[in-house]
Length: 333
Image 1 (cartoon, one colour):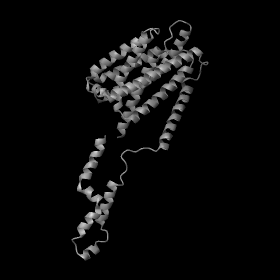
Image 2 (cartoon, helix red, strand yellow; image 1 turned 60 degrees about the vertical axis):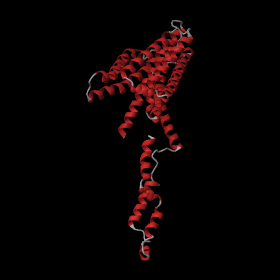
Image 3 (tube, helix red, strand yellow; image 1 turned 180 degrees about the vertical axis):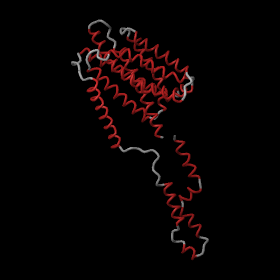
Image 4 (cartoon, helix red, strand yellow; image 1 turned 120 degrees about the horizontal axis):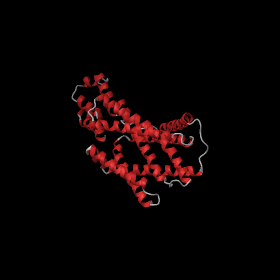
């Protein structure tokens, strides 16, 4: 981007036009020094050509607006305040619409189990973001994008599913091995997400903020709803995620036309956004149900296992929001 912006400026600076614009007085003196006195006196009045030239040179060299617009701090804080108010209003409106009959307050065991699950979710997302950023700086993201997409898909699926199954099904008593699988799972997610840093930082930050707003509001709805109210959604959501996965893989395997590609992309983006938003409700209520079962001694207490589902929900929502915001920005251009 720096080369693109400076190359026309350098070519303009090397031209005689720019040199003349920077030193108009020197060229005027040399031009009139060879003329007669009466011609010199008659030339004191500015000619239209000289006025036009000076105005154009001043516009090109001194009056041009900066290429990058930096908003004032007051404007930035105003935008953040509007966004925060929008997110808070979304939480209240979503809770009022989806959760008209709320349950009693959470018990101490449910609250503790839910908090620990979200702590593991936040820690896993932070590790994923930091490792993905480090891989991007080291050039690993460029090597991923230049490799065979089928090989990248196969390696990422094997690594992610293998480490995920290891983290989920290792007993909680084996703390070291379980956390090692968990770190490996987050590293695999980071390797898959590292090419996203080629996108604009503004798009990534907005998508992250919107993801936190969506997941926060839906988690609040799921936590305050009546017990097992959204657990029936497991079967429909599983069918929906199958359709989303097939629509994502269809362009790589089938010769689709332009209309078919647009339909499959819309299903993958907007359908996936709806499906994984539903999974946030389902996973939140599933965590509360497992908290009650663990309190009764009917299953082991494992918040790390519960966090993996929420982490995958947030990553999938974030990816789709990045793609939607990126496509809108390209359409504006």
